[in-house]
Length: 241
Image (cartoon, rainbow, N blue to C red):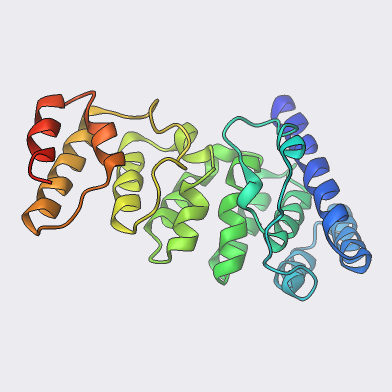
């Protein structure tokens, strides 16, 4: 847990510094006061009410991080350049809840996501790689992938190292295939080449055949994933695309 704690502290410091420089002082002071209360008392009610109230203080505008700010990120694959101000604030609230008791921590976060609206869910799923006990959130990540809201799906799939590190091949393959179904870019999925596998390639071939039979286009990103496993099939099908 030491390495995780060190990384978490660095991330909390970065998120705080980014927000402080990009929002009004009153908004940042409000957030700091809530973080202090949550950290000291571990009261669920303060976390719940603060998490919902973020929208009154932080707009859904991009963090707009600079290249120098992005260079400070300590977690490979974590790219918050597309995060919004409200998501960063909510992430800090979640990370401020004391985690010494794993059962209490997980139960509290389960309640948060269980009643979350879309923007609250996005913040939760974007925070997945930052949580203590990250291996405990596999089922929650899978739920995010199954969401019928593309923005929630993308919060799990895009610029997020959690799926590549913790999802099994079945869940990973389903995530990649769904990205194609909902029109999300594959290149924003971290670990795509490293987690590529023959079963995924076959799933993508079956999907491509269905698309071509319906006279619909096939993403070039799909062919790139299949090529290492079935190059002849790719050349055959691309001839008809």
